[in-house]
Image (spheres, rainbow, N blue to C red):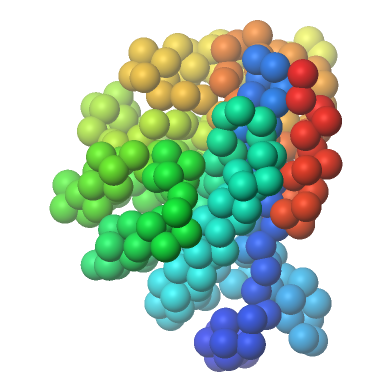
Length: 260
Ligand code: G
Ligand code: G
Ligand code: MN
Ligand code: NA
């Protein structure tokens, strides 16, 4: 595959860049942080989304240095937001996606700790997103590095939750602090009135998450009606085009006037 063969050079040539999508607290509309989403400014194909190259990078192992680069950039960006006072009294957090291969990388903990220390970012200002399906497949040895990071104060989010067939027992053994409800649930609430079964499912997931001390972030919120519905259901924070599309780091400043 030609994209695959060009990945290492692309990393060296700094062809990757990161967009940030705000995470908004449902209680007051304030911005609590942003998710880092990597893109490839390909010299011939234009901007490629992660779906085009993350699976290739995962397959070849380049995801490890690429993921480290994303982490470094995102952690530095979070520091800059905090130094500039963006986010007000509560420090802004940055969310970074981890792929299954990074989870198995021996240096995950030491490298993450080093990146945080070098930048001077408090571990609690970093949230690592791991997909629910990657986590439920992980055995106890594979969960150890995440547990260690969670013990150090790093937040762990279960990404795309609701698509991976978790059971209650598996949720309890995960070191997660947040559950990110997959966008498919948000879409189910789009009709007016919302589908009563979808409402009950989301209501149940939120209750279960809160019983397990997990915060709930909803993905893919596109309309005011969805936002209102999800807020009523007790979701803690939200992400989606209704609030902001992924954009350059400066766009987070523009997202702030939405704050209550
Ligand atoms: O905006 P969107 O097309 O950017 O992102 C699609 C998916 O790509 C996201 O759901 C996310 O899981 C994945 N993704 C985005 N950035 C990264 C990254 O830096 N590392 C990994 N492993 N996945 C990412
Ligand atoms: O990590 P994850 O796969 O969940 O990344 C979020 C993905 O969802 C990114 O590709 C991002 O561009 C996309 N996204 C973010 N907000 C919305 C939204 O409101 N609607 C839709 N359809 N996609 C969204
Ligand atoms: Mn994610
Ligand atoms: Na997701």
